[in-house]
Length: 317
Image 1 (cartoon, helix red, strand yellow):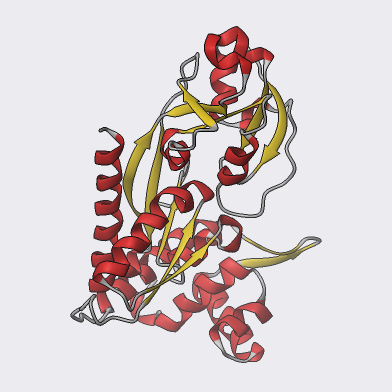
Image 2 (cartoon, rainbow, N blue to C red):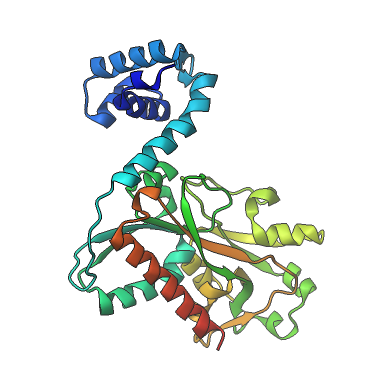
């Protein structure tokens, strides 16, 4: 195939079509008419000698060739958009920019309050728009609609930029009136009733099954490794809820140390080391390649890391 025959608009059409798998939705996404999008699909089919999208009982599905082309086309368009981004100076003291951040409950409880304090001092006109993992998708981040996502990620698209914010260990939080606090060992831990807190990713969650250890996360997988199991009485998606419930005399919350430190001065709560090994977790921030060279975004990423470093320094004292 002669590359000179390829219209850049066709690559844009192909990218959207393969993500939406629907001509009408693709047309709406690009603000063009449905006949124009249908014509674009016909030209792509003729150019690539492949149907690209085929109708099935479950709607339009991409062909094998289309699936092979999809990540290549996406990368080409992202690289081009990034290269064409205009350069501009950034003055944080006068900026009124809105930064949209997807933050897990864990990140929102630890990073965000300190970040806000820093912005109040150095960039009083900047606004934060905090979203939850169920509010956004990886596509939103990739397209630059979300400035940054701060969470714990197991798998990420290769196109994303990422940076580690910190590593964290686990602790056990319980009421100061909990009778097991004075003889806290593995057997006491296993006899107790527990509060489970979710490991959050993208997308809307579903109800939990106490018997599905693989979906319960790090704490329960660590117990499974030593062939033990805890009794979970409450499932919650909020660390603040978990810490509040830990005030109950018969409940224990096992949660990341940095989020537990939010309540370290509360005399009604006790924080103890877990009586078994739990692997560390990593908090990351990720962002689109479209924003990587943006001056305001570079400044903002630096603030997040500075806040994290300050937090680590305080926690080690």
